[in-house]
Image (cartoon, rainbow over all chains, first blue to last red; front, side):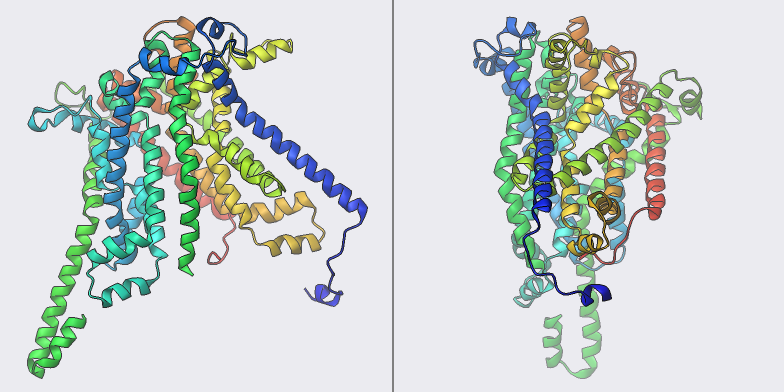
Length: 298
Length: 336
């Protein structure tokens, strides 16, 4: 510290040629590694696409380049397997569960973040513990529970309701994320609403929800992606009833059940990946907006 | 609150204190009711979908239960079978440990390397970041199918390319020695989420730390070892805990890879329990075995005993990591 102040302040100066050359070489090396890694990450997608465009006989051969390109494979996927049914089931699960997660987690997160009551810290710790434990720990009794109750003579096993209904009772991860965001909302905003005569419910449904839009969007997005990708629980409850399969289960059984080659399987796989990737590119803006809006906290 | 003080001004002094106290108590009860109302979704959900199954799981683990006949108390028999007799459970535990010990450190090292490279990039950092993150977005079933195809022994691109180089590629998902390493490859392909977390942490390291290290004559490697790593160690701890927890739950990739690889080897039409762990139980992880006992054989009591062991191990492992971390995690003052 003292030596640094004793030395004359270094003026911004062009570094000597030797240093510049070394830096340029380092930059080239860095980018070569990055490009090599990027190729390694992209190559699986390329091979998937190439295979998805092959004819049946080509898919059986070790040739890697499709000739001719068979774009109709992407249409054949829908005729070879009940793809539309799987899409419908997936949408039902994802949309209903996502709405449930958002609606039920917001008030819980608000109570944990902005209301003062005894036992609040303990409740928050319990939320976190529930987040850490593997779902396999509770899965057996849950299955038994859904198998034993038959309201109005309905069966839950074989349907997606055992994965949709719990989403309406608060999701630990979403509660955690929303709570962290609610903590950053300045107290003045809430006080201003209170002075205007708002009760806590009005404050939550108007002021907080409006300010927390980016966080809510993020929670909805994560929940949608989670349910879209979910495999274990839907398999558990609907594994034996193909009419209720979601895309992830249908895809995992696609090749063996429908006696199709790798070309159609890869076309189906790409079709399942596509929505997630499209959503990611569309929603990048939601994330950026979220980040800029958190600047309110200052 | 503002209303009670307004009302208080109008009342005589004697009535005021009683009235105010009553009003305050009423407000306190209303507040409590409001808290209960807001918390109610989680309270119900936690009780019905977590606490009750947890207790039931402990109870069922001492019973023989097949969903049809009522549970029959068998004492410690399930645990005795679990620790002493089940021929598959040690294979499953060994496989799970192998996966955690190999995959978690590799993922963290790989993600850290990529994150550091991204911060050094002068051009196209955004493009590279998106490319590295993309596979992590792919649904696990789809990503697994892609890997089983790319690594399939005869027509898979990897072995075809290796063949052109004159190398006989391994059987990957169909060879008991290569199936777990193939799953590690799949795990590294999907490393993007950890990488994004690391990237944010590395970018958050205060510049002046690097500058003072540079003044002290530290080279690039030393700066990374003695500045970057200690500063982001809390994030590494987070990644370790997350990785171990996910390792203990590892199911989808193993289930799908075993099913598809087995179906491909036999060209048989059905994907059944026979395929779990294919080839030769090399991908039989603990959650897969639990699934097999509970939901293909419907030994609910025994599966509950397995779940109790998993609960104890997850709890212990998380605790040990967090307690041990004091030695190597650098805790700064209040963030920012």
